[in-house]
Image (cartoon, rainbow, N blue to C red; front, side, top):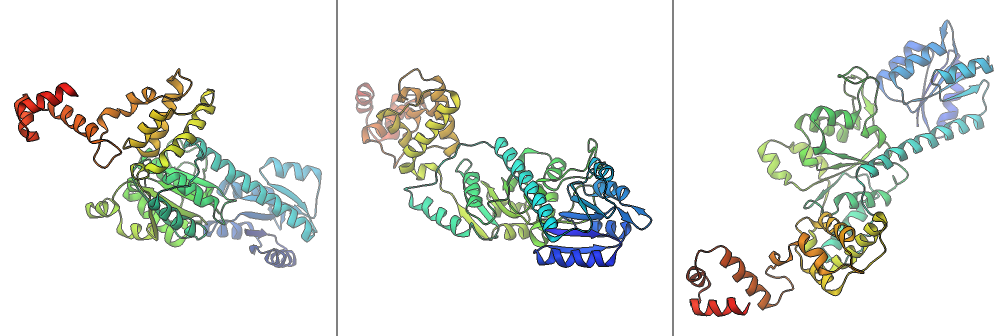
Length: 439
């Protein structure tokens, strides 16, 4: 962790700085409140050890200045003049913990372990809030599709690196699901997985959502607020639909990727963030670059490793397994008994083209679970949502009779006379009449 020591005694500063360094932390030390505030303007700290007696200065007064400047930093106050009263007052004013001087290395270790546990819990809360906002059932990523398997192989090889990842594919193909799976397989798995939906907010609110804001930076900013970047520190920041990110925010994201630095809205001092960025889009970023709505330099930073997820229509062998998982999830969430699909229903699911991909599959099954009165999900429970009759397509698992029937039905609905339809089909009207009567 990054630790600041504020003490007017040189021996105390030096001893504590060496001890913290031996524990693997990065520490620096100052002897006054003005020097401490100068350090805080230059960089951010995880922990501050603050002496309550700084010559003529009051450590308690400085504590309030520090917390007003950096409210999420853990301030540990310590003094040789320990008393219950000063301990209570320090905690009341926002100190994280209290330590008497002289302190032993074991006492310092315990304090820092407490800080680390608390920060992990805060990151966990941020992750759970992100999950609530983007709740999805847990779906296993096993696949029988060679194209999907290739995408997974690349993703899981890259998971344990800190390289930025760009996930491409149609809407609903499972990009956020894959991003979360990569986080779980990375060295950052104990950190938070934090999601930001780029199209969901205005530019101003999105910038604040990402980087946080200072008190008074805009109307309604009543206190300093951390952003999703800070919440994802030591974890993964997932930027969903990155193609919708406003140009003004793109420049700030580029700085974060290049320098690991950012500024809160309304602040001038830089903060550092140790985050791994995974982004996703269903847009063609190259065409957006040509239109001038997406920065080329940002694209190259995001596109260190790109992974394209295939649409569900190219993974027909996976549909049954995925459908059963969504069925189990929907039944448990709706308080319905566990059911299965009839053979006809499964065939309909396999042969449908799924333009909305996994998201559409989930919605279709959830609707069927809620409305079906049958002991199992039947084809009829799916037909209205799937519009199966209009989904006959070339290359699908359909007989020639099914294809011919659907083609003639649609052609007759789009032509004025039987003769016109027969001419387009290349057959005489009498043949078309017989076919129509048979169908």
